[in-house]
Image (tube, rainbow, N blue to C red; front, side, top):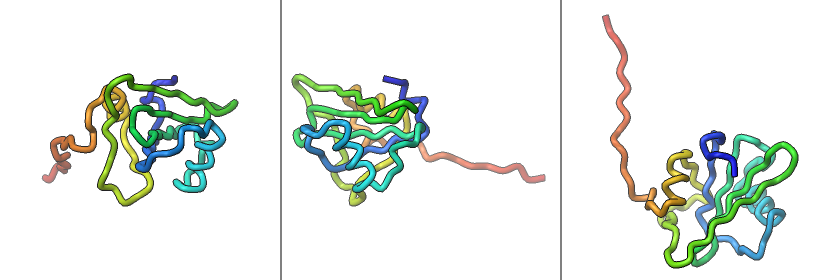
Length: 119
């Protein structure tokens, strides 16, 4: 799989999908349910199954779709529960943490400060 840092848009589908679907089914979910352009080479789409033991990551690489999967043998992936939207956008480092089992939905980073110079 390409490094997540190569993608500027990473969309997590908040609801589980039926993993009997393959590439075409996930493309359909990304376009019809999430309303996204799946042919955007900067976009990555992340899905999980009902018991959250598996993750599938879909992206377009200019010549076709690529599908990456990770299956946990014992644990479950932390997944968003309180989102009303169908998808949540995350950053590349958050995807890496999610794949490592970190619950990115409860992490609260420091508030970003924005300053300007006044004379």
